[in-house]
Image (cartoon, rainbow, N blue to C red; front, side, top):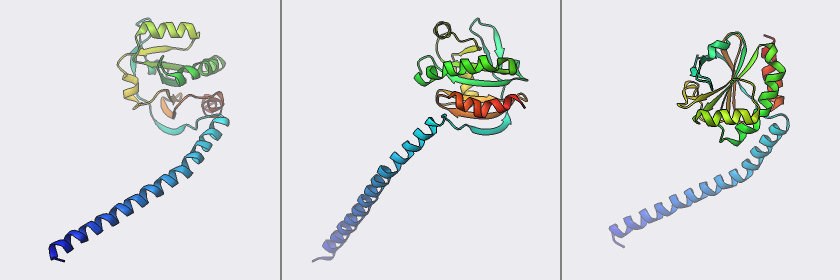
Length: 195
């Protein structure tokens, strides 16, 4: 066998070994995913059954956002400074957003006299669509259209629904993405009302 043929054979053998290793790694990853994914799904289902999301707890200065309300009046987050603000980024086309609206409405009704407000900022839909949804859903908390996603960009929100809770001192204390349950609001937001 010539030196050239030996070199070609060695490279082929090396390529075969690398392909075998890559195949082994892919099989190991597939087996790991097969084992891990059901466990992760079970943990998510358990968390949901126990009341839902666990918010990320923070303590950082809130950023003021200026928009207009459904009547075209100028409004801003700091108009509610001194209250606990639940800023909810949502959209009329988003099923989990619509799912959580009755929960937010009831919590708002139960706590608005405790210095609590929901600021529901709708991302991107025309004012007429937002107003029609608000009327049909019977929402009584402030709903602000945000055609240019100003609030979401300011707070780095990429998924809907996302909620940011701002305390009476205008500091961000909690945030989460996904539809919220009453149990989560009671456990994490209610204590902020007594601060």
